Image (cartoon, rainbow, N blue to C red; front, side, top):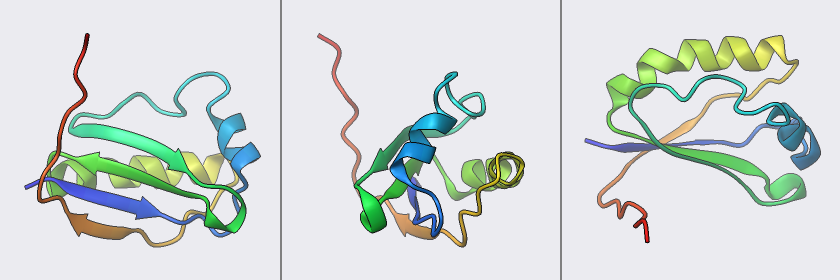
Length: 92
């Protein structure tokens, strides 16, 4: 079952988030990732990812945490939600 993972990084600004993507994705897109977005401004900034399964996210979580720590960011504890429906983008 797909899940959504929401991080509300307490000390990361939108500019820092954008900077972390300046050279491309901070890490290679992992297996099982369906979608990623950085959303909002100021204290309302958060990231959301959608994963094929809790196991897919779990396999990547340690890599993500270490990469963010190496870049100087603490993302805190994520919120994990069940995804009941996902409509993939259409190409056209």
